[in-house]
Every structure is written in structure tokens, then in C-alpha cells.
Length: 138
Image 1 (spheres, rainbow, N blue to C red):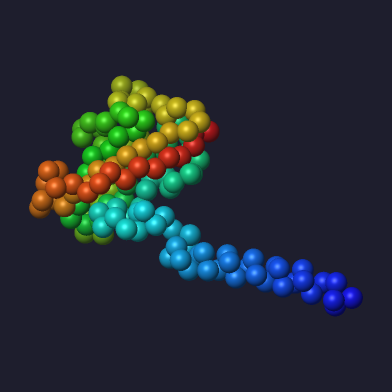
Image 2 (cartoon, one colour):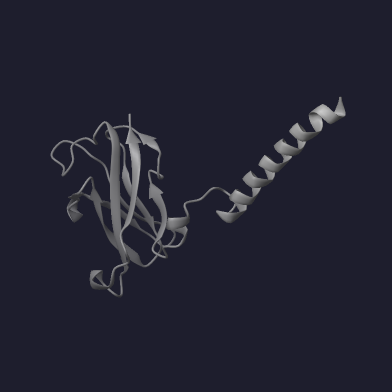
């Protein structure tokens, strides 16, 4: 009996090791490697591949001392329509669709956003490469 199940048990163990190794390689929590390598961005709103509603918030959690510009589905969002929260421990750049805004509602299905960030002291002329991600709208 043990001979029949031995290879199965070994196979399951090997798959488990591969999953653990993959989690370790991506920072242990399955984090977004592209975000982790960008010094100005600490997180994406929503995360890559997430599902949100048509009026859902889109943006980025920026590192302290950074600011940026946001585009959604190729539409650049005007500064006066972006909510920013710059405190010592928070630095958000967020847009919420709505009536009379650059985007009234996100497209049903796939949407993509792009954020370009720069150190406040350097200005937009010395911005980082754009960070692009996509998400689904219910």
C-alpha cells in the first residue's frame, strides 16, 4: 500500500516546495515585484488584477516625498480631480470616477491605469518610468 501512495506523497511535497519557493522569491506575500522595485510607489489602488465597481477608486500609495500624475485607460486625470493626502505617514494619489469628472464611470470589464512619479524636490522632468497595471470592473 505504501508503495502505491509513495510517489503521490512525494509529488504533493514537491509542489508544496515550489509554492513556498515562489512566495519567498516575491517577498513572501505574493507582492507585486514591479511595485517593490519602484522607490516612489508603495502600493496600487486597486491592486493588479483586482475587481472593483465602476465608481471604484484608482490610484497609488506613494512614498513620502514623492508626487505623480495618473492616467486611466489613456485619459490623463487633471490635478484638480485627484484627491491627495500628504501627511508624514500617508501619501495617496487617488481618483474616483463620477458625474462631471474626467471619467464618469470605469469601463465594464478590463481597465488599465498608469502612474508616473517623481521626487518632489526633482520635479516631473526627472520622473520614474511609468508604472502600468490593469484591473477588472464588475
